[in-house]
Amino acid sequence: MEKLEKLKAEFAGCTAEEKMHFIQAIMPEICNIFLENQEKFMQEMMPVCMQAMNAGKMDMPKMMGMFMNMMKGKD
Image 1: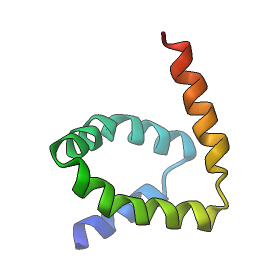
Image 2 (image 1 turned 180 degrees about the vertical axis):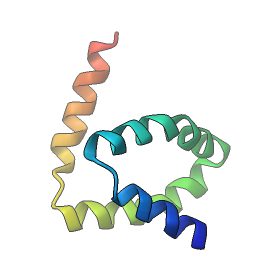
Image 3 (image 1 turned 60 degrees about the horizontal axis):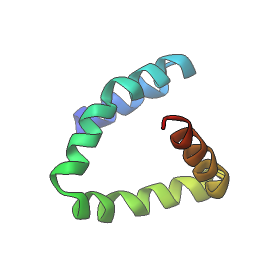
Image 4 (image 1 turned 90 degrees about the horizontal axis):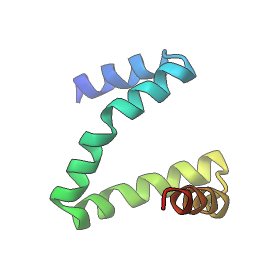
């Protein structure tokens, strides 16, 4: 876990633009992990996502609407 804490601290020190580039870079790997075991991924990640959304007062319906609108535009 020490390695993860170091990565987390380094990420926290990045600019918003650097964080976005990093997320874009690792997204394919995150998707692969999801595809390997979707049920386990959802069981472990949903509580973390819900906690982050509640802590940050994220507007989930708005985010989902934006996502759906973006997906419609890709047809």
